[in-house]
Image (cartoon, rainbow, N blue to C red):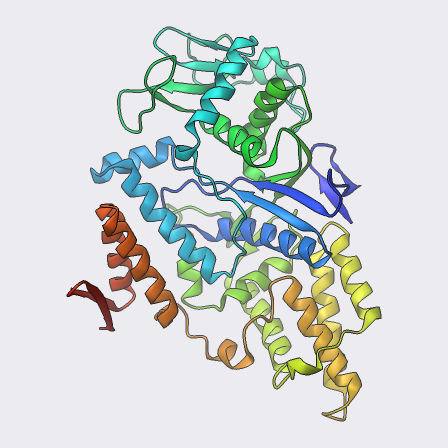
Length: 457
């Protein structure tokens, strides 16, 4: 298995620290808004990696954090005149709803920054004690990038170039304009106690502390969107390796960005699309297929005709497994080798999809509708596609898909149970946001005699 390592800029054999085990950390959502299709590309890509690693026989310890302490969350809370936790809870619920519809595998751990403050403080204190960080009057703590000789090794940026070309606002408290905050003094929520006074952690230190807590000082793969490579991932490396004296992550994987109609997605340009928007029109696997038609390290352009092309390909694959008898599941070994080889070459999904299309063509050339060769081809198609999150639905359900206008009964009940739990914990903000979201989907709730009843409007 070869993967492209961003820190060495070349494909390398994946050699895990522990045999048959992969420890993977992915930077998750900052929860201040609904997830957009750029997020979908990143997290569907890592979902693919986890699925295929598992298909090859690895046990995957998958950690994907939630950033619930960040200035954008606080700013939105101020704008809406609510608590920051109301904003984060609302969009965590929305994120989980989106990810469930996309059929993303749940991570083994999904830590929130707000729940790991002791670990964050411990790391900051250790950096300061060893002269890698410094505090200034008033309680701010900064990481000193000049104290770490290898700063810039991931993004291939020289420290002197950083200093001369810095666009960071000048802060007279910093030794270097590019020194980054580890602890920020504050007098507004969210507030946490520390030896430097009340405040909150910086973004970068949150991920370093959480990855260390759940995966150790050195682990196999760290990943995220390409936009996080600098400064976020660069800063994670610096502070983590200064704390441990060890390599932080052995491999780095980055997913390239997504544009819409040839331009960077932006609400001001009117080309901004949330996951919820897209799923109103397309089956979730259509979006997955669309992403797979471009290698994860190449930029992708989201446009109507391209996603319709992906739908046409997926339609044909679903047609080919119509009436498939699961009891006759058998796989062609030569086709399995061909399919696996494509994905073992740094997840070459365009090549893997071509293998599925070739199998589909062989199925269509079969004259007899009931022979062992045909069932082996259909079994291969189903098995290989399932390993990357495709053809998991029934053919009937796939072609009946009508978007996000309704919730299945099971999903409605899950949302009601989450709302009842929130009410029991006196988290009325979250309870109200769940009720509002259900209402927008055409579901009304009635609390009566200790039970919650629902009906379609």
